[in-house]
Amino acid sequence: MPNSTVDEIRSALEALEDPKARAVNERHGDPHGVNLSKLRAVAKSAGMSTDLARSLWATDEVAAQLVALLVAKPRELPADEIDAMLRSTRSAKAHDWLVNYIAKKSPLAEELRSRWMADADADARAAGWSLTSMRVQKKPEGLDLDALLDRIERELRDAPSREQWAMNETLAHIGIHHPALRDRAVEIGERLHVLADYPVPPNCTSPFAPAWIAEMVRRQG
Image (tube, rainbow, N blue to C red):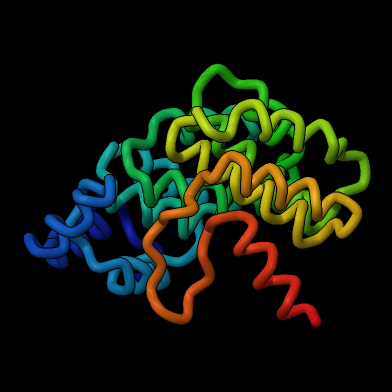
């Protein structure tokens, strides 16, 4: 489907609509009924095109917007447009993909991180925390890690679920990647007890920060 049109992609997605998949997806905050592996195949066939992505996003259809996030070129999207996309999405998966496939790969990631960390909207702050986790791991120079821990200590327990999850991720990565702050990160996690009871399948790592930190440090060696 090279040089695909919006109508062709929408038709392909409509043909893949599965009521059972929709029921499962809607339970997870994603109002569409397309299997994600098949959706990725549609995007791969369409090819990379930011103009196509913009047109797909404008449909306000979740499956089409997910394809948009797969075919957009992050370097071609200005910060204000990425910000507007974040605020207009009504899908948990689209929020996640926008952060991971667009914002994190954008040369404007730090501008977006700073903007979103101070935002009044909890979903925008969640995106900011996700970008902060990436910096904690890959480029911590210039970050005030103690101040981040101060904020996590104040806000983690009562944060809305999406923001709480992303903030908890930052807490864990500070503990994993910065040994001098590991004890403090573990102590905060143990005291706040956030996600301590989160159900985890066998052989998977718990998102509870002290357990997550301990397991990843063990793997390091």
